[in-house]
Length: 588
Image (cartoon, rainbow, N blue to C red; front, top):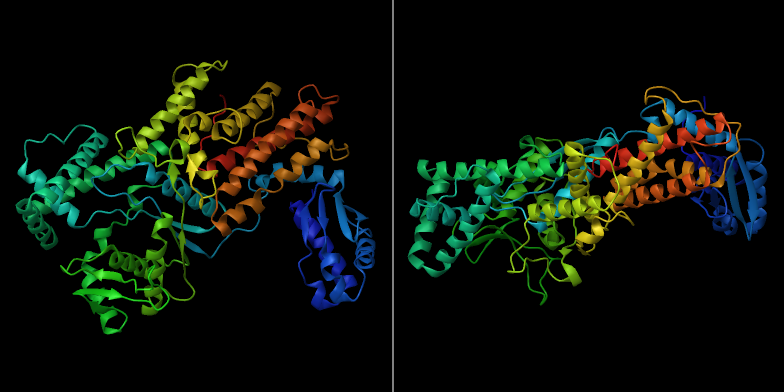
């Protein structure tokens, strides 16, 4: 059986071998410049790129390469234009590729060498205690979780970190208000309801803080009590943390995120370290006193008017800013977690903050040169017409409300679509499609861009949506079920002697590209590349199924070959959806 090797890799190796026989070593080691092509399976324009340094006309060099390529192997070569090499794989080799893929669960998806020896720490989500997650938390959850999945699937060692905001002066304000109003009934049965009540009470306590100087002073004293560990204050704070983390976990579970309580790396965890951390920076001359605060300044970071922009570590009142906490987490992630690459999946508006934190950590020696810290920024979710996404009353939209709306939208779509789903199975499909629609709408957009959230569009069965891909997967599964296809652990029969239909060829070559796409996602940290690939795959399968009868194929051998393609497509769609954090129902 043919060893599984990506088709493009085979073409690259063949062109490189031809280059080694035709060109001097310094040129032969260059990139063979092989790319997918509309004119053939692949095309190389390396002859055009290297003709001048080789001292040859481009077409003359291409002819020499073509002669070497034609000598052996499964590639046919055709010369075109001023020196393009059009490369076409033999039908038998492509069918053997399908057979080899189906023979091994890992090779089935064409995934190559694992990313072993690299530990990624992925920091995402990071909601604030006693506040509900809102639409602003969608992107960090969806993008961070997908990156963790892809990196883990490729074999990297992934450590998830959820840096909860559980400390600060705002807790003194809220706790003081709760203590002064014991009649408030915020302790409801459901943790989500409790956090919703606390969120509203936080806003009320803020109004009291801003409007009542005496309350503001009592709230400041409550902060001192919290920082000193006073028992009654600490007990209320611990209750707020417990209720909030339980509510967050419910939402994570509903969204199908990987995050668990074991991934929490709360801000308060590093409180005891902060005085010595700041003093160490002061002693090293990295931090200086400015206006009563301890700050770090940078020669290359200034404000709009050219004024220095400080990274504030310790404020005038003696409290520590989240910059100090972020520096402590970097030390923890390098020294204790052994990170090689730290990814911070955080709003683009925090770019300057992370730039200053990373630079400070480098200067202090806490972020060694061999460790990479990367801010993975993302744009904003916008409302209709590109306006800020708000409720009619002007409040921020709750993340749970967003999910509810998408589930309701899918329910309406399903009501208008013929199906035989009932009861629990129907409800599971509706939930999977609704939650998946929200996540896919986010992930399919380049993370650097803002995008408009449109419920009607994201739950559509047409176009580049999660629902469309889930439906495409279920459609392939239905074909296999109708065919009575062999179990997944039974090797299907593939006849490599059969000629390939163009639609079959296009589908197989696209299936062959999953590994390259996943490695692009891992390198560029852009899940939308996987979304685009899966959408192209679903369209290619539709074209294949329309042009190539499967269940009514002309011969049993042809039917078996095409069922093998169905199995490979179903497996690839299911795995791709899973790496995006979407479920792939067998039936829709």
